[in-house]
Length: 469
Figure (cartoon, rainbow, N blue to C red):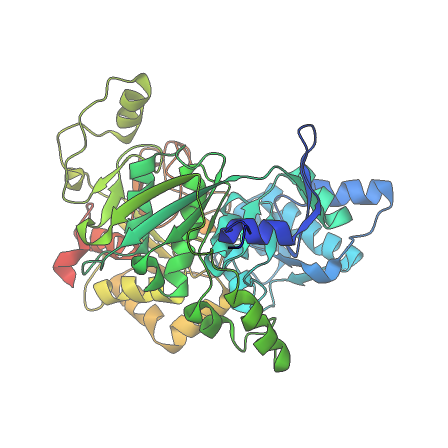
């Protein structure tokens, strides 16, 4: 009998990229296969390289885009950038200058592939199974849907990776989250991951890398898997991963940066071996039944404060933070969230801005109107998705319903680019964070799926999408 340790997906990718193993006193040195960069977390890093007269170590493994600070109204000149403010405009200018100076590929305003960094990586085929991927953005965990080890890093670490293509890291513990059963009609990947966070809490994954598994996950398309992994950070996890399979390979095949010809066959053979070994041990495990889930919505000021859409706001747990959250959201325990009028609806972000997300929202909106007094923004995740959606006529459905159809970008997810929610206004958003002021000073955010967002736009209140299906 072999004594070889059975390894998880995470453990395989980790060991494949070890340059120097960790010790009690020092973290490991991990090699990085892909460094994704954007305009917000790179200016200081490039300045350090310039001051030390260092080049970017592997510009061929570095990929840039503009997303956080770019306005989602059409941008044709630098003057248009002022829509998002002087700071945002300066960040964009500096990103363009830095990428040109250091020889890094940048998807600029004229690129068909410009878009949210965690949307264009998979879209281009740059995101691949078994890779280590980092970015100065916490939702880098999105790329784990492909079986990559992907996580966000700080600005100082961005500089380290630019200079060395390596990163100092401590090995995380392993956490299996198994979801089994068939999702009911109107229940989506967004509802699944919100339910997971509600069950394990916003710190349930701290110190761990979560592997999402089970037949519910295997039945999901790649867009849905990306939604699930995207929000693993909201459960406190270092990263989220899903083992690559035929669905993964079919998504990647033929994309610009994916292996071609004989290299493709070799890559698939290599990727197939990444799945966790049978009987591999995890440090922690949790199971959920998919058939028990309903559309989910948040009621507080973190993603773990979540309930089924047909449930009342839970009763006060006695903590000061709970009371503060309900006071901020202007909600009362024991009352349904559906009694709260909605001011703004946002469909977009690196969580839910892909073509299938837009199709789900359009299916609800078709032939219907956004309620009077409600502002609805629909923001595709990339220019490619925008073009694909327009080819299907989705933009006509949105605009006919009274929604605004925008250019790609992070937009209202974080309210730093001209797209904000007003003081005291309630937003139903397909984004990933509902912290105080996340979408604007004093803004109140309810996280939901694209279908729930669309239904809420129609009714002018938080609404169950299942009645429209």
